[in-house]
View 1 (cartoon, rainbow over the protein chains, first blue to last red):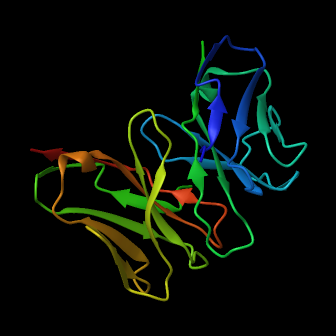
View 2 (spheres, rainbow over the protein chains, first blue to last red):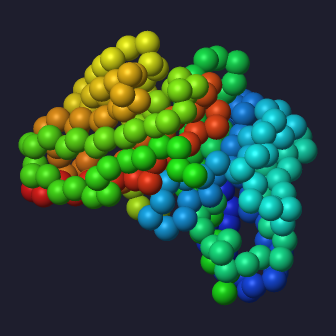
Length: 115
Length: 111
């Protein structure tokens, strides 16, 4: 079956602009996660959704970052007033909650470059 | 701060050799320790995972060793193959949702 998909694969924007990154999780997965991976580093947790609600948004770096999942499937990560330091690969993952220690399946990521 | 420390940053191994990657953690609440493999341009993919109630887990050529008292765990790749050339990340979490990743180890297998 289809895995986690993310669009766009690459996004180049200018400092100060607004961007939206989209994630389509695996069908039936109730849990969805966003991570950020800077060059040469491991992924860093941003936010976790269980269904439509954000169960843990403690990893969001500041109030310029916001994520939604209005129907419990597709999620959008929104970044306002982008800064050069926001440049990274943004990874989305999903898992089937309700069973202990579920594998998180990652998408290929969106590479964001802020000029 | 980084909750999981990983070493080495990179390693080179001959085909057929053994690759060993080490990780250490501080948070004793962590109870799930997965290893992920990542190829360039791709997202991480789960390789193998362990819980602290066992000291070792083996799946094919991949083995996790876990030392709860030392708060350390390691990945051994036996009979390394060129197709194993990738970046490997250890991770840890309490429960299974908020993974804390190490910085990664780039493994190069020379034919």
